[in-house]
Image 1 (cartoon, helix red, strand yellow):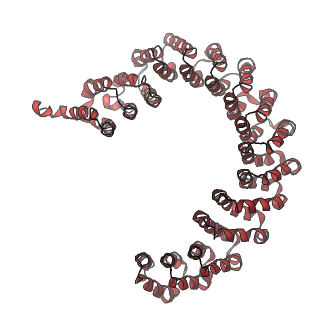
Image 2 (tube, one colour):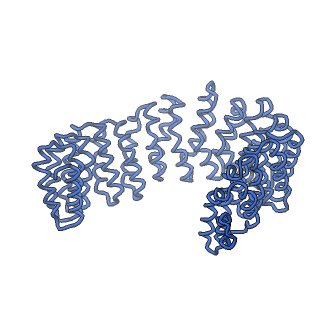
Image 3 (cartoon, one colour):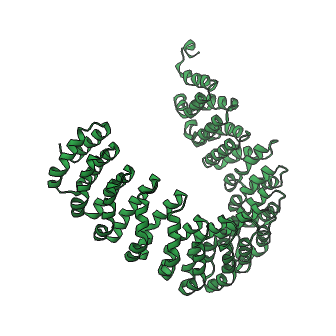
Length: 589
């Protein structure tokens, strides 16, 4: 076609048309992703007059192609000639905002929100606002849901008559017959409230909020809870009690657990929004009820917020509120029947010790920590151990050490390897808190046992753990306690354990320093170069490369070089490769 006219400038659009009509989705997708290149080739004039009409007319394709198109069009402002022509992008995006697939609609709305900022106030009223109206009064729910996301971006920059129309459209959509539309309106209620004048927040938004919060669909009601946070932050303190609190109280006792879950999940934000007085009178009893909820999901969400809620209580009577209202509920949750609830609580309960201070922690919280350390669920025990540093600051860890030990030992031998892995990662922290004598007496054997675990990830983590311990306790401790045990594994009949010796030497050489490495570790590594298993031999070459920089030049020349040369002529290819690599890295050639 282009050749016949002798017009090369039509070529890009001809290729695009061909590719967009191709049966292969991937080809069509690629051509959409190259859209900006094609627009550049066509120039701004022809992009507006040919490319965009073509795209608007041919929007019937696979969802992933439409998704890519919706995303591309959001970055097209400069390609159509800058902000004064940005309205040319509205027709294709309007079509995309009405398609059936939610992901495509959301992306089209995102692009429309983006380009709305580039419209001048006049263009916004002439081109953008009519589009929002068309979507808001569309026959299909798809277009009406898309409209909900566009009100707040055009409202601040239009005249007061148009503002009144926009508020009316939003009101209509909040009471739409289709639940999906009400859901979309509820999800944008907070955002829309933020751009409205305060009088309209009180007159319009509150009534919509109340209506949506008592909608027959729980999916709408729970979104109204999210909006509650935004609305509460906008209103002056004296209006909160009458305008917001009745609805919030109702949501906290909603018959649907999903709505109560949402209240629990947003509790800290609500607490900050309504201020200390309402928190004391209203939110404390509501929080107690959520902690005692009949649904485990709600209790778990509330348990997660215990520390945050207590931290944000007014300081003058914080301790009294926690001790009389919150702690009794927490005590019940420690022995909850659901492990997710106990696990959620265990991840935050230690934080209460810094709020309540030493005496209360010893008297009231310590028994709870000890009970959780004995819990049958490994996640609960793990969450307690991983947050020990909070308690250590307040009362010192010795108080816990007697119960801590059995819990650590059990976790260290847990059947799930991920649990074993997690406890290894806390070992250096525990070691620092418990001190070297306690560690040597009680935990050292555990750390060594992990080196011969049947899961590689555990052996690897145990090696790193040793390195961190040596950094904490020093080279002398390593020489007396760790190094002899590690080197003893070099004679183990299992080649995997012999390899672990090499991995440990790699990790420890730097922390232990030149003397220990040269006198104690190097001879073992050199001896292992005669191992029957090739995997061990090539790891010897890798180890020599790793510890080489720690050794002095004499040891490198007289002891390391002959061994590496011997390995470089090994029968096994891998051994040869790693030996040659070590020779070149250590510059021994």
